[in-house]
Image (cartoon, rainbow, N blue to C red; front, side, top):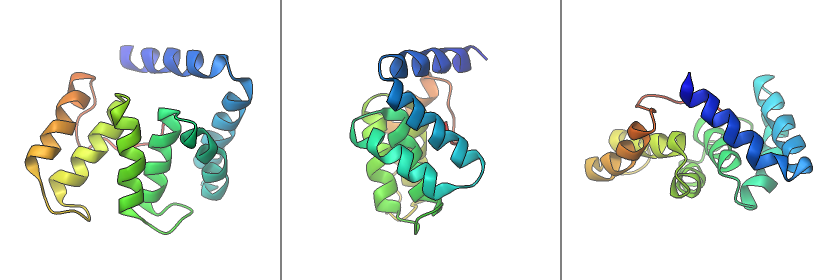
Amino acid sequence: MRLHRVALAVLVLTFAAVPSAAQNFYKGMEAYQQADYGTALRESEPLAVRGYQIAQYNLGVLYDGGLGVPADKSRARLWYRKAAEQGFAQAQNNLGRMFYLGDDVPPDYARAAAYFWPAAIQGIAFPHFFWV
């Protein structure tokens, strides 16, 4: 519960300074919840390109699951990695999962552990997989 409050606070502070970014994020989130993945992609992609870690993670989820786009594991890894490099736990976890399971890459337990560890410290543990 504490982690969710912290994540919400970060989200509010992240988008408070940029109202249009917040609007796009919430449109994307709402579209995702309604399984309108094309809209979720359109709303999230510009934010991801601008460096918003949550949007980067969300694009990773779309490409990882083939939601609204053809599944593309290398693109999913790219977006997860961008968010993971900023310390986003869910992205770190999902990268760890991909390397642990050998999901479109050779299994690499050392790399998996390198991603799982910082995610676990933040309270996210495999096999957690969801849209933020």
